[in-house]
Image (cartoon, rainbow, N blue to C red; front, side, top):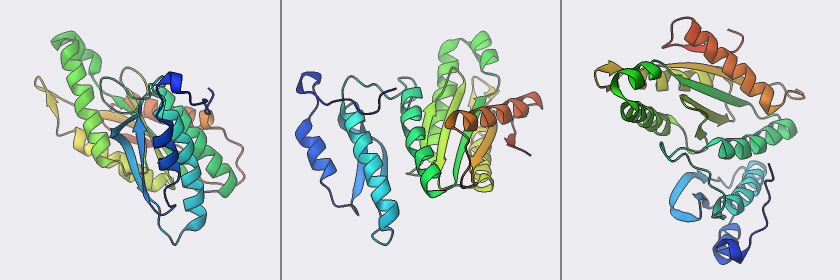
Length: 236
């Protein structure tokens, strides 16, 4: 996937707004917009003055993301849940993995698999299933930090990229999501999720972003196989 589309006025891109966004001071709060709409930020990040190295890396990433997201032809949100979609996940994961490879910052990935979604669809219809997905997406959005990136991966799966996060801390995040989802019911069915967590934390590792996804997905599969409504850490 090309991450550097050439902005074009023919594509409806507001080039002046992009230039202003990129020209902001590096300690400013930056907003990533989706489909060129400044009223729908995916995330806002504070860049502290006392961390110039990290700030410069983050600003570079966000400058690239601003161009990508401002292009009206790049649809990066999931229409049902309002979270990111697979394309957004891929773009952000590529940037975070590159940062890990260069600076050794820990990087975690969480795979969230919705339990009993087929049962809800079969017994109550797909509108009820959609209601369940939106409710779980709201929990993920509420529990995620400003720097995290959450996306819908498939019919009943979500991904959350956790930069600067070790495996144990990512596990704490996963448990918060799981506990909150347990409080939800749709048409009398109590919702639950099976969650897999994996991390990159060894500087010099040659693992790819796909390797990380594969490990997190395998952990989520083990959580579901063992009865669901649980968190499984990679290697645990």
